[in-house]
Length: 175
Image (cartoon, rainbow, N blue to C red; front, side):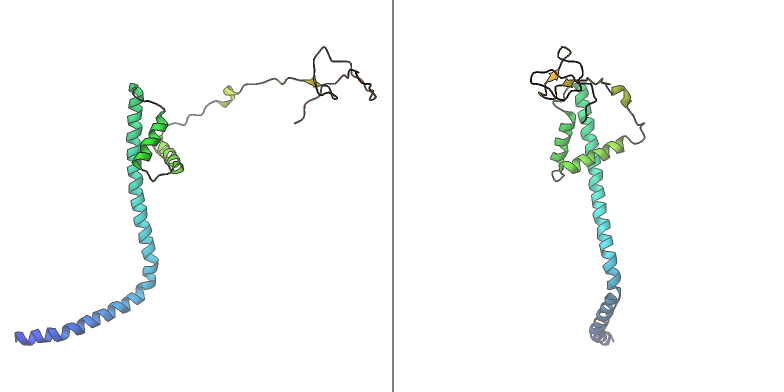
Protein backbone atom coordinates (compact mmCIF):
# COMPACT_ATOMS: atom_id res chain seq x y z
CA UNK A 1 0.00 0.00 0.00
CA UNK A 2 2.81 2.34 0.79
CA UNK A 3 4.38 1.65 -2.57
CA UNK A 4 1.10 2.46 -4.31
CA UNK A 5 0.88 5.79 -2.47
CA UNK A 6 4.48 6.58 -3.33
CA UNK A 7 3.80 5.88 -7.01
CA UNK A 8 0.61 7.94 -6.88
CA UNK A 9 2.44 10.95 -5.38
CA UNK A 10 5.19 10.54 -7.97
CA UNK A 11 2.60 10.68 -10.76
CA UNK A 12 0.43 13.41 -9.25
CA UNK A 13 3.25 15.68 -8.17
CA UNK A 14 4.21 16.90 -11.68
CA UNK A 15 0.52 17.33 -12.57
CA UNK A 16 -0.12 19.32 -9.39
CA UNK A 17 2.99 21.46 -10.00
CA UNK A 18 1.94 22.21 -13.59
CA UNK A 19 -1.57 23.14 -12.45
CA UNK A 20 -0.29 25.48 -9.73
CA UNK A 21 2.14 27.09 -12.18
CA UNK A 22 -0.68 27.65 -14.67
CA UNK A 23 -2.94 29.18 -12.00
CA UNK A 24 -0.15 31.43 -10.75
CA UNK A 25 0.48 32.64 -14.31
CA UNK A 26 -3.22 33.36 -14.87
CA UNK A 27 -3.48 35.14 -11.54
CA UNK A 28 -0.40 37.25 -12.24
CA UNK A 29 -1.86 38.36 -15.58
CA UNK A 30 -5.02 39.48 -13.84
CA UNK A 31 -3.30 41.37 -11.01
CA UNK A 32 -0.44 42.83 -13.09
CA UNK A 33 -2.22 46.16 -13.74
CA UNK A 34 -2.89 46.54 -10.02
CA UNK A 35 0.73 45.68 -9.21
CA UNK A 36 1.93 48.32 -11.68
CA UNK A 37 0.06 50.92 -9.62
CA UNK A 38 0.90 49.57 -6.17
CA UNK A 39 4.63 48.83 -6.55
CA UNK A 40 5.71 52.48 -7.21
CA UNK A 41 3.68 53.63 -4.21
CA UNK A 42 5.33 51.04 -1.99
CA UNK A 43 8.78 52.00 -3.29
CA UNK A 44 8.05 55.72 -2.68
CA UNK A 45 6.91 54.88 0.86
CA UNK A 46 10.10 52.94 1.58
CA UNK A 47 12.28 55.75 0.19
CA UNK A 48 10.36 58.34 2.24
CA UNK A 49 10.72 56.22 5.37
CA UNK A 50 14.48 55.89 4.83
CA UNK A 51 14.71 59.66 4.20
CA UNK A 52 12.72 60.33 7.36
CA UNK A 53 15.10 58.20 9.40
CA UNK A 54 18.07 60.02 7.85
CA UNK A 55 16.43 63.39 8.61
CA UNK A 56 15.79 62.33 12.21
CA UNK A 57 19.47 61.37 12.52
CA UNK A 58 20.50 64.75 11.10
CA UNK A 59 18.22 66.57 13.55
CA UNK A 60 19.62 64.61 16.47
CA UNK A 61 23.22 65.17 15.40
CA UNK A 62 22.56 68.86 14.60
CA UNK A 63 21.13 69.45 18.09
CA UNK A 64 24.10 67.68 19.67
CA UNK A 65 26.60 69.78 17.68
CA UNK A 66 24.79 73.03 18.47
CA UNK A 67 24.64 72.19 22.19
CA UNK A 68 28.35 71.36 22.18
CA UNK A 69 29.18 74.63 20.42
CA UNK A 70 26.96 76.56 22.86
CA UNK A 71 28.86 75.04 25.78
CA UNK A 72 32.24 75.69 24.13
CA UNK A 73 31.21 79.32 23.59
CA UNK A 74 30.07 79.64 27.20
CA UNK A 75 33.36 78.23 28.49
CA UNK A 76 35.46 80.28 26.06
CA UNK A 77 36.79 77.23 24.22
CA UNK A 78 35.18 78.17 20.90
CA UNK A 79 37.64 79.39 18.31
CA UNK A 80 35.99 81.21 15.39
CA UNK A 81 32.38 81.66 14.44
CA UNK A 82 29.83 79.24 15.92
CA UNK A 83 27.80 79.01 12.69
CA UNK A 84 30.88 78.28 10.58
CA UNK A 85 32.02 75.58 13.00
CA UNK A 86 28.52 74.08 12.96
CA UNK A 87 28.49 73.98 9.15
CA UNK A 88 31.94 72.35 9.04
CA UNK A 89 30.93 69.66 11.54
CA UNK A 90 27.64 68.91 9.74
CA UNK A 91 29.38 68.63 6.35
CA UNK A 92 32.01 66.37 7.92
CA UNK A 93 29.29 64.09 9.28
CA UNK A 94 27.07 64.22 6.15
CA UNK A 95 29.43 64.77 3.18
CA UNK A 96 26.71 64.41 0.52
CA UNK A 97 24.78 67.46 1.74
CA UNK A 98 25.18 70.66 -0.30
CA UNK A 99 25.48 74.17 1.12
CA UNK A 100 21.94 75.04 -0.05
CA UNK A 101 20.51 71.88 1.53
CA UNK A 102 22.40 72.59 4.75
CA UNK A 103 21.05 76.15 4.83
CA UNK A 104 17.47 74.88 4.38
CA UNK A 105 18.05 72.20 7.00
CA UNK A 106 19.37 74.81 9.46
CA UNK A 107 16.29 76.99 8.95
CA UNK A 108 14.03 73.99 9.46
CA UNK A 109 15.92 72.92 12.56
CA UNK A 110 15.75 76.45 13.98
CA UNK A 111 12.00 76.47 13.37
CA UNK A 112 11.68 73.07 15.03
CA UNK A 113 13.69 74.18 18.07
CA UNK A 114 11.95 77.55 18.38
CA UNK A 115 8.47 76.05 18.01
CA UNK A 116 6.23 77.45 20.74
CA UNK A 117 8.49 80.37 21.58
CA UNK A 118 7.23 83.91 21.30
CA UNK A 119 8.14 85.77 18.13
CA UNK A 120 10.41 88.76 18.69
CA UNK A 121 9.68 91.69 16.41
CA UNK A 122 12.12 94.57 16.51
CA UNK A 123 10.88 98.14 16.37
CA UNK A 124 12.05 99.17 12.93
CA UNK A 125 11.15 102.86 13.38
CA UNK A 126 13.72 103.24 16.18
CA UNK A 127 16.53 102.17 13.85
CA UNK A 128 15.69 104.64 11.07
CA UNK A 129 17.99 107.64 10.96
CA UNK A 130 16.17 110.65 9.60
CA UNK A 131 18.19 112.78 7.22
CA UNK A 132 17.64 116.34 6.10
CA UNK A 133 18.30 116.93 2.41
CA UNK A 134 21.00 119.45 1.56
CA UNK A 135 20.09 121.77 -1.30
CA UNK A 136 23.00 122.49 -3.62
CA UNK A 137 23.17 124.92 -6.50
CA UNK A 138 25.12 124.41 -9.72
CA UNK A 139 26.12 126.76 -12.51
CA UNK A 140 24.28 125.56 -15.66
CA UNK A 141 27.19 126.44 -17.93
CA UNK A 142 30.24 125.20 -16.01
CA UNK A 143 28.37 122.66 -13.83
CA UNK A 144 30.39 123.79 -10.82
CA UNK A 145 28.80 123.94 -7.39
CA UNK A 146 27.84 127.45 -6.35
CA UNK A 147 28.39 128.70 -2.82
CA UNK A 148 26.72 131.59 -1.02
CA UNK A 149 29.49 133.91 -2.18
CA UNK A 150 29.03 133.09 -5.87
CA UNK A 151 25.25 133.22 -5.95
CA UNK A 152 23.93 136.21 -7.87
CA UNK A 153 20.44 137.55 -8.18
CA UNK A 154 18.19 135.61 -10.50
CA UNK A 155 18.05 136.92 -14.03
CA UNK A 156 15.66 136.15 -16.80
CA UNK A 157 17.95 137.42 -19.51
CA UNK A 158 19.01 134.49 -21.70
CA UNK A 159 21.65 136.40 -23.65
CA UNK A 160 24.73 136.24 -21.47
CA UNK A 161 28.26 137.25 -22.22
CA UNK A 162 31.23 135.12 -21.26
CA UNK A 163 32.23 135.69 -17.65
CA UNK A 164 28.79 136.76 -16.47
CA UNK A 165 27.58 135.25 -13.22
CA UNK A 166 24.28 133.43 -13.41
CA UNK A 167 21.90 133.26 -10.47
CA UNK A 168 19.99 130.06 -10.01
CA UNK A 169 16.74 129.61 -8.17
CA UNK A 170 16.55 126.59 -5.88
CA UNK A 171 14.71 123.65 -7.27
CA UNK A 172 14.22 120.12 -6.08
CA UNK A 173 16.67 117.73 -7.67
CA UNK A 174 15.26 115.18 -10.08
CA UNK A 175 16.46 111.65 -10.15
